[in-house]
Length: 171
Image 1 (cartoon, rainbow, N blue to C red):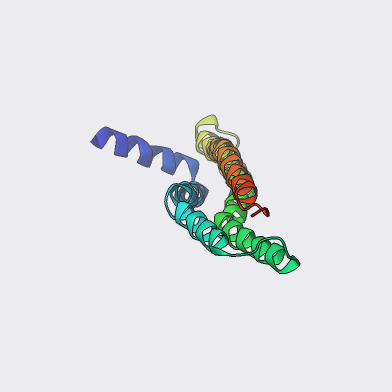
Image 2: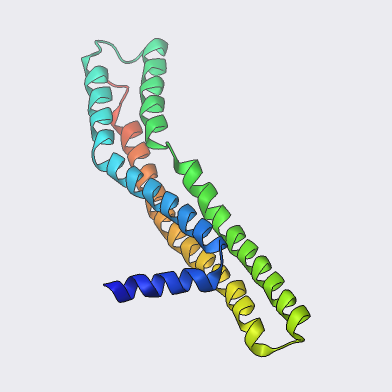
């Protein structure tokens, strides 16, 4: 177990300070993804059942007023369903940029090493490592987020369709 922590610490040190930022953004992204999945499995079901019971309890469902109430119920449920989805997409878009920032800071280290050591390969190796590791980390985090977001978006769209199809206008 200790070897794992040593390997992680060595990886973070080799990648530079930007890796901590990438790790924090990735953690936030996955925390929000898991929160949305948990919400869909638990609270969203309660929201749908409350909206359905309110709709089924209405005596008339064909007037213009009833149509507006139906749209309000659907909108309220969908608003809670889509919460944090935009922030997840923002983090997915931010992660490659953070990787690029790590690349730039690593290349600055390479140029500094070239300036002070005259192109010594050993002194440039740390900068090259700090330039490539954040890029790779940002891309891996982005790809994992894109896959999870695709799945999550599909679940949200399915739940939206279910809500619209369930609140029917006929009596």
